[in-house]
Image 1 (cartoon, helix red, strand yellow):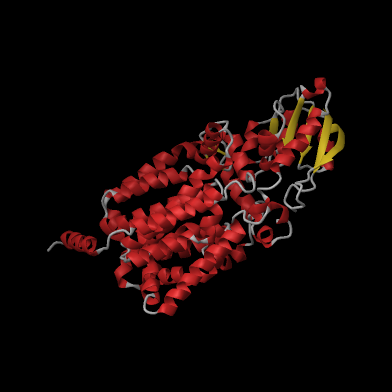
Image 2: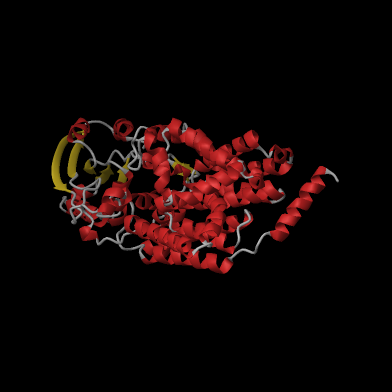
Length: 505
């Protein structure tokens, strides 16, 4: 029998023997996760990134200095349509987080899991710290995690059966690349895994290359924008590697951090999955995934990538490891109890640390605030805007016509745009907001936050302190205690000041 016919017959037999997808249980798991995220979505406030997305999304572009266009455009659209509802803004994230859990269970089925294995895979992903953390906010990471999971599922099918799955994978990858360029690293790593361990025969088909062409075509607008603006994302990547981001970590923490991305209690599940994919002859067509994991570890260690950049590979590892763990646990009551406790403990810890469950007036000095940097980023923005509004209101009417707000970072600018006084133009040199400047030369009065007095004195003849930022709950976040400056009499033109204000990171 010809080689192709044998492969086709084997694939047909595998399709017949695979169990049905445990849709009911998986949808319950995904639905409960989504419901939890929606129910807690408004307990604190906007994250600085969400305020930033709403602001830059109001200025549509093919790309931005620090990211592709899709999430900012989505954020602004949701904000506008809902009338500023934070629940509506975060609703897609809750659905995507629940969908990620469901897809992880479906992928377990594609890898031969029974119903119990599918449910365990979905449950592990649902209670994972990274799923809950990114599912609470509208961020590029939320969409990126879902994209990697769906892409992994399609690649599992493509590596086994070929066919249209390659084209669908290209479509999903292209959309993902308009969200976060991290998808490109995933694709390169999987291709490297195929070249190193096989199955290399899939590359003789035109379909993988057609899928790649589809992805590249969808990514083209962002690539064209980056090329025409001098590839600012490369400068951003260097800044992140140097620690300029609030969530940057030492590169030597990258590997230890992997133990907590899902849960310390569930490490055995994804480790077992990685071993099965790497060693089990039954999974030889999927060895590209564990190889991709190793390649990405090396790449992110070398480039200073953030530890959570590997999060998108855990769904396929959990999908591969869930069935043997579930089978072993089912052999005894104690095994089932231990597994249940591990899942419950994972959910409890992740929810406590990464959802806004601690009352905001008790957040200062709490463990969630110490562990979860993003918790502090969701507190105090309305008061920030009100403080600036009061300074603006105290200006003479003739001076208000020539006043602007200048923020040292995009969160400050986003907060004043959302909560500040109507009619006050908002500027910042941070990331994509730099492209919206410089301010007009008629802007001779500046309310500034996030700058040192010495820098402002280089640009303005008069600089005075007129206020201080206080979030009202004593939380030591990035803006707490910042000085509000009132600056007058520019020493030079804004065109000369603006290059000194611009920052990437």
